[in-house]
Length: 167
Image: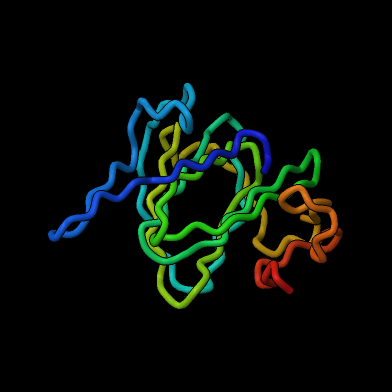
C-alpha cells in the first residue's frame, strides 16, 4: 500500500433495534494521526460510475467511508508509478485515509448505488479549490506496480477501471 494510506475497521454494535457505529472520533490517532477534520460530505453514486482522477495540491487529506454499496478505490503515485487498489463496502465498514497528493478516485462496483461519506482536512473553496483533475481514462496513468506487485497483468498498461483484478 502507498505510504500514508491507512484503513480503520469500524465496529457495528448490533441489537434488536438495528445497529450503531462510531464513524469518526478525534482520538483515533491510528488513522487520523495529527490530521484535523474540517468538512464532512455525503455522495450518492450510481452503479458502474467512475469518479476519478483528482488530487489535492495544498495538503488536503481525504477519508472515505462507504455506508452502502461497494467501491473500488485507487490511489496513484506519479513519482513511483505505484497504484494501490482496494475494495470498500457498506457490509464491512472501514475508514480509508488517502493523502491528497496521490491521484485518487473510485468506481461504484456491484449492482447497488453507493452511499459514501468522506471527510476532508480542508474546507472546500469553490473560488480557489485545492484540486487538480485528470480524466478517468487518462492513457498516461500507467502503473508499474499494483498493491506492491509487478507481476499483475495490468502493470505497464494504461489504467482501466473496468478490468477486474482477477483477470
